[in-house]
Image 1: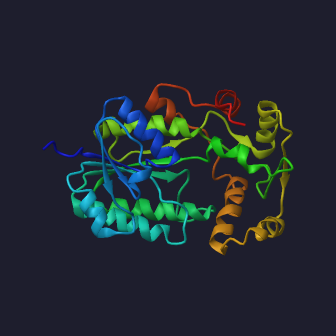
Image 2 (image 1 turned 180 degrees about the horizontal axis):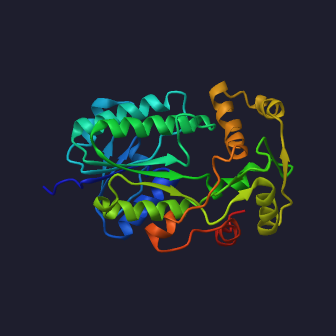
Length: 284
């Protein structure tokens, strides 16, 4: 019997993990796809399935036996996401995983304005303490999400002020990830801040979205009170609303500003800007 691949990939049924898994398959890299639902897993060359969830330490450890390098996509937003992450990291260490590559968030810190950035930083710290080698991919806000911020009336609302962000295309994050996973030893102990090529305010992004989509998009700078009130109708739990609102306040605080050369360093290609992303996506 052929041994299971020693590279494990999570999140292959989602957007980023799916891109990474497909690019690895195209490059001829065998991989073990860790999935919750085998029925949703992509059918890829040289890929085998292992069923596991982040919250199940026994199942996760079994699924990770024999894995040397693990690509860990951050879990879906949930109130207990950090606990899920810690359980999975501990299971990976117990299974003998040597190197974990984790998708974190730009500027993750113990005092991040973006509430979910706190979870990412705490996950990084758990990984550091585990004894495994690590590489952290700190993604900026996704360009892919920007068109979705505008409501039906074409208005992007949030307390971002004149703050800017160096938003990055998900495809550039995927290509950067594949570079790391194909030769992980070169990236041990590294943290990469993955950004697009420019800093954009939401007002400027609205202009680019208008030009690139043909839809009139504007930005309204809400107060904090307006931000919470305008989101109250969704009936979301407080932690979720805090996460939504703090996305904008993190921009206002300058915590998503500052483009880097990391994507070019890893892939040899310049990252996409918003105008180019819109021209290439044709999805709007």
